[in-house]
Structure formats: structure tokens, C-alpha cells
Length: 169
Image (cartoon, rainbow, N blue to C red):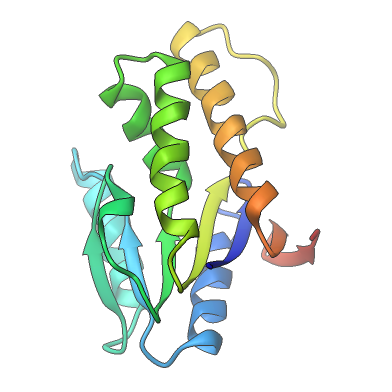
């Protein structure tokens, strides 16, 4: 059975750095599961920044959608991030929230039965106002459902605010 740790907070709050340090405390050779897809120069620069921060002890799997198809047994896996992954799920399922969430739960359940430690990074995007954009509202709903699902299974959860961690579970 998996050990699950959830790291949540706002954009640029320090979640990924906190999660990387935690993963390195748990393993000398952690695995980085990257869910981002690079569509433009800005995203490419963000990916390079994350890669530069990690040392040679990290292995990386780039998996934008089917995160449950890999064997992570015995590993500490940093999943960065659920937010980009949920976005990928939404577009893969033609913006249907119910299908997207069902797909997400299926993939997440494949992880929860593995003998591994998962450190999930996600954005807490529901703290602001309601968007005027219908697609953004769908995404906010889906992201909230995914975050709640992972949090319900998590052994530990942390909220990062301005680089400061607060253990919430």
C-alpha cells in the first residue's frame, strides 16, 4: 500500500522546492514524475529551471496522462504536478468533468496500491473568485475534486504559503 503525501498551495509558493527536499529526505535516489507538457518557450524555461534544481540522484519519467501505467515499487516518487495533470485529463476527456474525474481516480488508484511513497504537488486554485470563463470554472471544479480525492487518501498533507510549510494532516 502506498504512502501518500500531499503538498498544496498557491502558484510560486515554494511547493516544488519543499516537495523536492522532502523526497530527498525519504530517498537518496527519488523519482521525478513530470506531468507537464511543453507547448511554448515559457514552459520550456520553467521545466529547465526545475531540472537545474535537481541533482544527478534524480531519475525522471515524463508522463502527462497515464501516471498509473508505471511500476514505482520501492521508490519515492515526486509527482509534479497534479494541477497540470488534471488539465491534461480535462482536455483528454473533451472537457467533460465527470469523465475526467473518473479517469483521474482510476489512474490515482493504480498508484495507491503500489508499495511506494508518493509526494504529490498541487495548486490550491479554489481560494479566489469564480471565473467568468466556463472552461476555467470546469477546471477549477475538477482540480478541487482531484485535490480532495488525493487528500482523502494522504497520510500527510502540507499547505505552503510564501515558502512556509504548515502541516494540515
